[in-house]
Length: 473
Image (cartoon, rainbow, N blue to C red; front, side, top):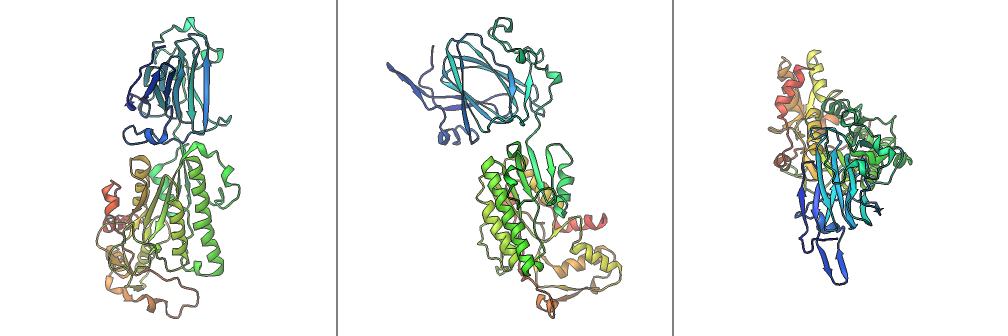
């Protein structure tokens, strides 16, 4: 067996997205040779940039005869394949949904090479030397409930040039009977779970992502996030991301004993469960947060690095949820403010009052920006689909900050009514004489979106969105 000694650790892209061929340093002398077969720190560093795929199992395949050929199998997990001794010919075919479906890559592997095979890419190996053994790390345990995809070794479309003709090699009867490419059911993308599907943001996410078998929209009645059985409620390894659009948002009711319990359950206990599942299964967790994590005393816009300082119970639970989500390796905390979408909200209330001839009193000492759920949903799609660094982002409408009083007058104006009908009052005046508990509100809810714009997350202009919203209300 000839081994290429002394190569530097490096990675080579292939024509199949995510399929990465690696050169491994092998050190040899009269006693034999040694190599670092898998070295997480080096291989996930920027020079190689292999995905940190979190292997959980190591398998070894030994083939004593030249020509032993394994079928083209695409599994629902990532795989890192290398040779321990001998030499193999490898053939990989992209069997995932998408533009690269059917793309083929082939290469010979010896102990100085390895390959990273992403989920859904079919892989097959033909033994070129006697007593060959190759090893592969996988990031999931085998399951009979998992989804697999197969391709016939002799498929004419793939047209793989096997070094040893298939008529002369050892192949299992099962592998001979796999379908041709035209009959292959592509491997679907990993699933996305959207919680809070019936809320304002949940409905916007349904509009943004559409209806697909790989997107699951769920409500509290369908999936209890506080259930002790949540860890086994799904085969979580089949999911790639969780978008947490569920939350307890009744800020005043949260100040009551019953509301406090519900707020902590929904905004903290449930979030902790999702964070645990995301961490254990390597999922991306997208969590929507709030301006209420700040006390509103800052004279400038709040950045993503400002210390949390919530005033009331609702804000405290959202701040606790933020801290928990940030422990997940792949997390996005999207902080937003003054959310407007499909449902009961401030803008619809003001438009209704204007049309019914009612002149409202509206607080004028709370300042922020409206954020429309369509923009939040679009931001979520970008962080899931694009190469956005994990972290915290402010997702809020752009434009000049305004008070609730200013926005109410603007709604009256855009609705064709006299904005002078709206009277401004302080927060203290507005809630004076209230008989039910009232949550403290941050006076400054302005969030700085500079970092969000810098990474390419799109944000809409608040006033333009308000015009369009009222036109279609």
